Length: 211
View (cartoon, rainbow, N blue to C red):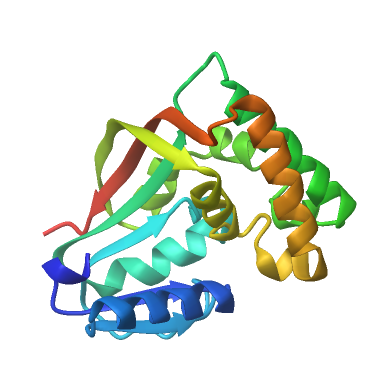
């Protein structure tokens, strides 16, 4: 988004993610990003912001507290966009099954199950994001979906897993080599070429500060 706005604040509580993003920005000459390692509940806010985008993470924060913090910091008609992405294949591909099983097995082995909030899908069913955004005084504009075909390599899948808060390098620590070896062998058993196509659906819930 940096090319389309004057300034970006990039916030993540994982220091490793912030360091990676900063290095990548430097490599491609992007200079209008302020990188901040902090939790959404605590990061100092100095708006107004035209857009606040939260990617696949709203369920991991205190939703009411974060939404109420953001609402008064939006510019006139400024927006909050909550992005989610998931595998659209109800049939569950061999790739999806392998990744799910492998991640669960390693989370159990490392005692890292607590990194995923227990029961969060049920909590969101009971209290959808739409209701949280409305309680914060925002006007809910709707959910918008789109689909793409993604071509994964083993390297890009490893990078994707490391980009999450579920099983990143900070969790694996001394087990990184063993994890990558396990992942490669499991994936190559599915496809000897190591290239996988996947139909992915993405969506965003959009809310706006009322005029």
